Every structure is written in structure tokens, then in C-alpha cells.
Amino acid sequence: MIHDSSAGEVAWSPGPARAALWKWAKAEGIGSLLLPLLLFYGARRWVGPGPALVLASLAPLGVLLLGLARERRIKPVALLAGVSALLGALLAWAFQDPRAIVYKDTVVDALWGIAFAGLAVLPVARPLHRLPAPAAPLLRRGATAGDWSRPGVQAVFRRLLLLWSAQSFLFSASKPLCLLRFGLDDYLISTVIVRVTVQTLVTLYSLWRLRRALETA
Image (cartoon, rainbow, N blue to C red; front, side):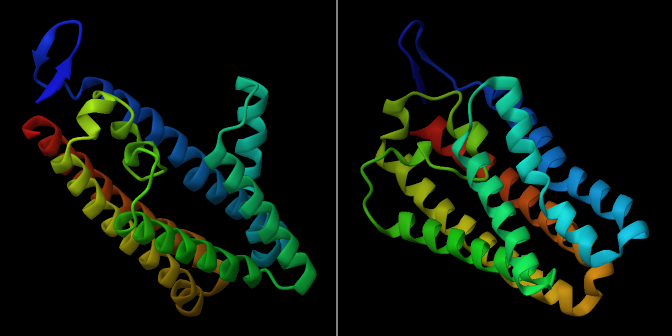
């Protein structure tokens, strides 16, 4: 059960979490999925799949600059995505091979998998619900710090960290496989399909599992 200091003990309401999830989904869909696809297929017919992939990979950098212009601040996750995008483009230029972007993304996803797995098994001082995660909208809305400190909720969250770790490793493995199977022409759309399918299922399950944990804690 969630506690509300102003109104006593009340059942947790998913309204704020759903609103935050929708906001996150729009940002994720536009910045990470829709914009890269538009850039890639818009440029491919003029410059070929290789340069188009490099251009599409810079989409997170554009989202970072747009967010900075609109909000006058930089979000840490957006900053990491922007730096990673710029690094991929530099690697593609240095090696004269756009596939360097694929290899860079493969390593980055694997590092996220290692990080999530480490957080699941190692004691951390920072509250787990403040960490970046696929279910971040729920983790920051609808519950107090006291709710998150409950052992039952923390145990569920640590198990979900292992699930998110497995998701990251799956994304890491899917990228070179999609490149090998579909080539540069259809690499981006194939990885987007994998990402949307897996991340939607994992996020919905995470929301459901955490909601149950918060209601019964």
C-alpha cells in the first residue's frame, strides 16, 4: 500500500505514472525511433545507405541540442546518447566504414547490460528507483521514498534490473545479426522492430510487476 502523508493511507493511483509513461514513450519514439528512420530513408536515395546511416545515428545529438534550446538544461541520459552518437559518427569517419556505428552500439548496449546486472547484485547507496531504467516514468511518480525503501519492493526492483540487463544484451546481440542478415539497406528498420517489440513487452511487464509490489508492500 502507498502512503500519502497528506491524506493518510491510500491505494496507489496509476494516473501519474501513465501520464509520465506516455510522455517518455513520445520522447523515446520520436528521438530514438522515428527521427532516425526519417533521416535514413530520406537521405538513402541521395547519398546511399552508408552515409545515410551515419546521418541517422546523429539523431540523438539533435534531440540533445533541441532539449537544451527548449529547456535550458541537459538531461544526463540525453547527454550520454548525444555523446555516443557523436562518437559513432567519428568512428565511422575514422575507419571510413559506417559499420563502425553498429559495432559501437553493440558495445554500448553490452555495457548497459553489465551495469544493470551489477546494480542488481551489488549494494548501492543511491535509491534504486532513481537509476535510469526502461520503466523510469513509473519509478519517479506515484510513490514516496519510504515506499521504495521497503524490502519487498527493493527485491522486485533488483529482479527487474536483471531483466533489463538481459534486454540490453539482447539488443547488443541483435545489431550485428541484423547487419549480417539484412545489410545496411534494412539494418535500421530491423533493429527498430526488435527494439520496439522487446522494449514494449519488458516495460509493460515492469510496470505491472512494480505496481503489484507497491500495492502490497
